[in-house]
Length: 453
Image (cartoon, rainbow, N blue to C red; front, side, top):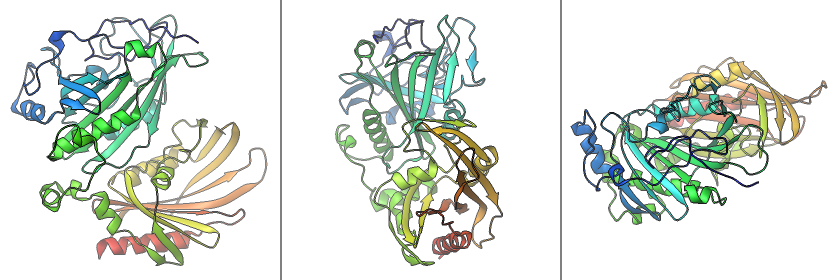
């Protein structure tokens, strides 16, 4: 199916509209000279402060990952370089109805400075701000607003939002990556296009990066790239952390900061992936033979129960997300027919979010890859473990729909030790064999003891 892309509002590249017209979403127009300022200049907001100037000096500009980034001018009546990243419908002249209600706000807030540019096929935007709660709020937005229907025009439009898995990046915490597929209600085929967004925190600074197809390329099927977003995000993090070298060099694979850099960082940043890996239980523990995870996939499976599914429709919506976020290191191994995963991360709100997940998703129905599912999630009595707090325990089992056949039971325990989140997940790898809650508690206690030793 061919794709046509008229805009509903003429905007500069600094105001990417995410509402579709009758044919497709708004693609930003070419920026005017007034929309950019030379690299290094401070922004002329109405209430410009020293903090804005300081952020501007840390903003990524110049040649990076194939893009030429230039700092943007913030309009004198605005407080953000990219208001639509905070509310995609902020400048709509017409009344509009968004479903679900409340999905106008993306959760990203207090962006103060930004830069933008283009690669060969896509646009790139980078923003810095002070809203360090933005990643958590954007994650909540993504969970609630997996599909947004906009009745702004005669042809309703639909945005589908999915969380993405990206490589771990040293020096940043609370990272959330999303893909938004923009299309129409009832459209079949490949109509529409995708944009990618990554947000996370470096100390008390929030970083947000977005990539999207250029207006010309959207009509030819060339898409934006998550890979470009990761490279740009990584480069901005490194610049904030004070890495040496050119902007092009900063797109190389991330390295562990030198000891002097780690010592001068904030406490939350000190919990690097390398630090957490060294604190994991390993070897023979409670009968399990644990070894470092060889990939991030097991961590993704803990955060998203259906991360491998090509498609799924769940009721209630959002029950693919377990609430266990920002897990960065893990070990795993088996004991007979049961497999164990032990993970550490930086999101100490995970136990609370996992409890909310269990309460909301006590019964999950729907389909995964075309197959009907029926799963039950139960809050178990949390064990008391010295040295850990906010402990939450759950069990899960699956059933064959419309039968009495109940699958084996798995267990998960999560809690916090200081600023480290601990997760233990036990599940059977053979049919007819339940995991053991006692074993899960034993592994959890062992991990807590190692963290406190």
